[in-house]
Length: 196
Length: 207
Image (cartoon, rainbow over all chains, first blue to last red; front, side):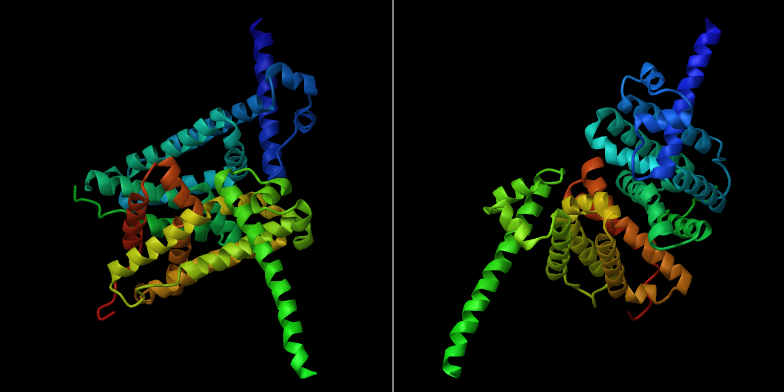
């Protein structure tokens, strides 16, 4: 019984991974059930036995991606001096943006037709804000409520996934140059670090 | 003979003007529909709103893609006319406030078209070119408004700062301030003003 459930979970996982691989490869086109089935090595029927419709698969794939991003961010060292924290934050955020850009774009395009996907976009943005609150607590703690909120909102705009894409695709910056632009911007926007 | 020519020229010009006016009304109907709903309007909806037939639309635009490109050009020209650089010689705070309010006004008016534009950009090289033009104009404006501060930076730092400023004040960034964070026009401007003031280097003495 447990073995059967495990196999079914494994199949579900492979379908989600196939969907994500196709999103990355074929963006901006969204994968069809037939293509996902072909990539995963299952029948279309297998997909719809596990997901009631393609929207449910999109939601499951988004949840899987969010878990991956959160795990990546959680492994980051929140300590260190100002420069180390900025560098660590930028490095993690840059890698996540580079990897998840196609899925993020699909999510943004699909969210208007789905309350569930819209909620996930909101959750991701809230998560970015709370991570920055944690990373830059020493600096942000020196600000009153309104400028603190303004600073966080501006930082969120700067480190948005599309902002990363713009540096890479539109302005043709390398990964390192784009990271350097973010490091410079965050360092300028943050207030001075208080003495310990 | 020469006395007969002016009336003939006037008749042709009048017809041409009416046709241009129709074209403009069709583009304006398209833009109004986009502001009302994020879905791409159909030719029938545009025709109904503009008060013309569907045939009139396709007499002036080869297809809806051509109408989209023309509407983007119209909006770019409109944005440039409504938002000339102001207070270029003002002090730092005056220049930041002026630039932010101008940009915010452009974003507030243009975000609906911008979204359709971005969702369909992969279909058209012409739209890609317009995107480059729009972004370059924003950067050019930063260069005009913040010349004193930018002149203190080296090439790489200056380039990176301009890119970050352009990203920060992007249409979608503005939409996020208004829709996601629920800020008023003034509060959203305050976020940009504070961020730009922090991002720019110190103003050199005497500037």
